[in-house]
Image (cartoon, rainbow, N blue to C red):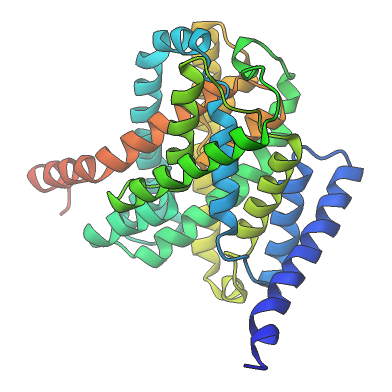
Length: 355
């Protein structure tokens, strides 16, 4: 019993302390999203170098719940009607992300010497846990897939918020939430409904349940024109810290022992994916007349929670970014494995020369 604080509480307090120091430093340096990037960098570097850091149990889920509730407030009836015209672009961008992943996976295969099935599932931008599970079903190295996605999210979250500022920050109808005051009773009801939805989503096996469930509840209430409450700015800051800290604790000292070729392949394929998704975002921005920053975030291969909170914090097109990111998640989870099966069948039917 006496060992509990040492084994459980101290690593958590260490991670929180590092998060506060790193977040403050990033704030002083005027780095975008300081309270997410600071904990991510600080805790991640500490973890890789052997410092015992621990994630708050349920911290990531709590952060996602806050974000889901806050994002839903942007889906007013007016905004929702406006978004309906973008569904062809959402579908195109979602399926294009699988194609981009297939190309980047080939590059990773060539550099790292891993099998193409592993490279494919390591590079298609979906959730780390979902892609690792599908990879195992297809006969890939699920550990290499999980590592690749963790590093991808780290790189994207670290570069995109800083990069999009170069294109300018613009606010419009899509970056304004429902104008309602904070109401304690309304907040309590919203949180209870959000938790219930998250548990239902988990029960039926829907990925990212702790953001998608609250997002669905908050969106439905806002679309009805009866938003219960606003989500205080301080709650969003707390969500950033929880997410950044959770991402940082994913990294282990063993990362330094991974083969150099594997790490180079992961980084190279991630930057290739970034280059192609940014190009896709810019092309869609030109076609539909939206801001470049909004569309770059919409097509970026980062985590759903991280890209959406970035849009919210930078006052970009929150509803559009959220809609694109959710569409990509759904399409990747549903179609990346069947598409791989088709690719596999075609490769067997038409083998490459020399095989």
